[in-house]
Image 1 (cartoon, rainbow, N blue to C red):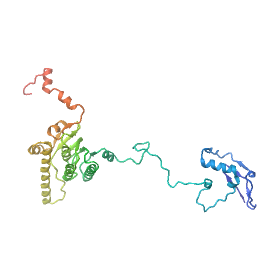
Image 2 (image 1 turned 180 degrees about the vertical axis):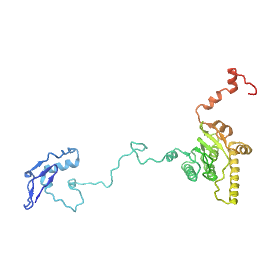
Image 3 (image 1 turned 180 degrees about the horizontal axis):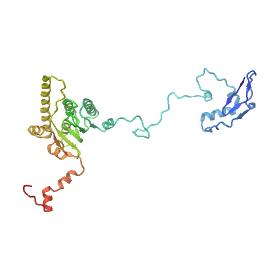
Image 4 (image 1 turned 30 degrees about the horizontal axis):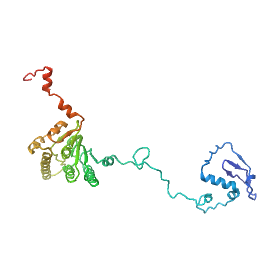
Length: 322
């Protein structure tokens, strides 16, 4: 039975299994190259380990060719050529960038609310359900703990405790919880309406620091009465209890809106009988906000002539009774 020994890209001559194996000098071993095998890539001449190994073979080939290979040894072969061989105890540490970008990520980037929180921005972009209330209050408390003197920027785009179709999605206590948290923390809170501020979201908008309550030019604010949650198969007496609680919440909401808008309670209660929508200009007149965030808009509106002035300059006469 014949056996073949392979060495790199060469094959040695076959040797009979019955033949007694004796060590021969490496110079008399004849091998032929196999042309079908791909050529070996060139070795890096600057590799310190290969350079050390090559010099050891050149100086004493027998010490390399005749060395016994122990299977019990845990050390890779030929590492003892170095005076003090060292193995990596842990993976190599690559130098990372300190910024979050796609080129050198230090770690997986945080979620968007965390990045906004780093800029002291709290964004309410959903109806006031318990999960949203929990997150907003936690962020307010965290920002106060980080720095009780720096302002907090509260951006609002919420329909309050109801959806846009008027269906209740959360209890009125969700809006009051955020309002109480705003009143208790030491930081000044600047509020900005960026879409809709309806119901309790309008209260949160008006509860910001006076002079620092803003609204985008095309945002909408609306105040309305609290809604009775779905009663389902509830008993009549329980429905009455819930109705009384809704009336109590309505009175509290009216008092708070009157306090922060500067309007009498009677005026707020009257406009709240039906949904009271306000654009940016109307919200500013009603006292919900202080400024409109549109560059130069207020100056443009103040410089624009009134409709009567336009008619007079154009020579248009208004006919009575039309």
